[in-house]
Image (cartoon, rainbow, N blue to C red):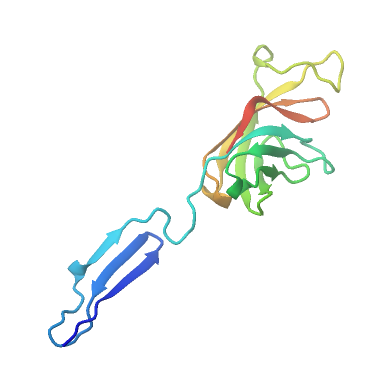
Length: 176
């Protein structure tokens, strides 16, 4: 009598579960618990692993509804599309906000900001207020929940803010 071998592979949230079994025919054996092996998969059934994103440019205005903050020149274009948009007026001193990626996804961040002592402020002259300096603001926080929109990691950026709330990066990187 001929035996047929059937392989079963199930994708689960904890990786791949593989088992081999033969139909219960004369001379064939049935599936035993020792025939099952768990093989961790790289992603399970949830899709790609979340990535750490770095953007090289920040522009826009922290308080404006017509020129909201935008991060661009971002890596991982399959996740970010290269550009992320904050909602109008979407960056306060602290709180939660959502970055909407050009790729169509979105990532929620929870953040706070600090202003270093005047001697630690490395920003230059304020082009919107002659004779004044821009204010350095350090943004720090995290992606919430971790993996939101395919992004993971800490949120970090050093920002120069004008008296009219126009923004640019001091450090050259906006990490999330």
